[in-house]
Image (tube, rainbow over all chains, first blue to last red):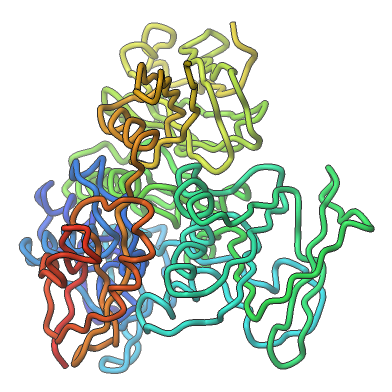
Length: 435
Length: 122
């Protein structure tokens, strides 16, 4: 028995959830509820006090809290209800009725169930913890994920340490190198296992180069010294198989080790719901409507695939919000059985979002986003539909740390395929030598 | 004498690879940028580099003991650490709102510092 009925339940009140909510309301949907586990809306943006947000969405450069505030204001102006301090613990799907049940809990209402016509997954991602990194050594105090350190410094106003080594060159680690330096800490180096950085180039320039912090590519931490508190770490160079090279070990005396070794979409709920998950992204497989393979359940933002730019999260979430509203309001064809284009990625392209496109349901133009698995210079990005070249884009630089995108144009696709033939088609996205 | 400088633009996450050519210390050409902001960045970077500083100031009477701030416009790059040091001497009292002025002229740069988060009084 449900305690509450809602048309649309949005799980997560960060940038994705807020944008999805505003977009669904603009599409004409009244009955929306956002569920957020933190004490306030805005998600991780609240602790991202650096700038660089909003250039696409608002045409100006904002800090994280300012960007969040714009969307929070929109949600409040639209009078969209939200629950704070509330944790969703389960989502289930009834195949017979098509309804979804969201089970949530908080300290006031206890455990309760909400029956929803559609659900948007906007839970974001979390950091890869030390336990997943296989670093030998003791477990002393002074080891933090970069985002945890960011919370301590930027929200709590506390310093996690004074002499810092950072493992992993993800964006949060780079940003924290500068933050810790500003706050008086000495950042000795950033060690990156891979031969390329996991973060944005601009962050290497403005967070490391500006402060003469060395970036050690193809290096990793092989030992942590210290029993109660970190006393230092040993860093070694790694070979092309990412194995430490004996004899290259260097000891760095430090009291803090920050880890910025990747982000993992937070999809425990999605897995329990039974939606298919892509092992490459850790997020759900979605179609052109950002709908998972559970009808009426949509995904957007970092829970779908980890983004570099919040602006892209907002854009993606706005699509999910609109599509979910259309689904509820009966504006789109939910019993679709026509042609479908499966997107296959190969030769350096690791995945794509979406992974399937139903041409008759796609808008006139549609963005497909993906990441590459290595650094590529002066290559072409080639897209084929049913074996025929659909587009070819020369690329100066592509890198794993920077998400790539292509824009599909429906009319061009229709020149190659018949969108109403009911058949399955294949699109291939790959990296090729420059032509 | 022509001096060629390879830069990565930091004005937005696209991170354009920009080439700036200088002749006798003056900017002769800028290429590789995909917007006017990139040209401005490159010109500044090879003549007088500037940065926006984002940091914190102490907050009295709020939910948390700090609140985020930024310089309203860019400051000279070599003044970054002076700005950060000067921010440590500032304490605001909650409530504060985005856009509130935390300092009129930070570290002699002539640039204002403004609050970037809302914080209610508790």
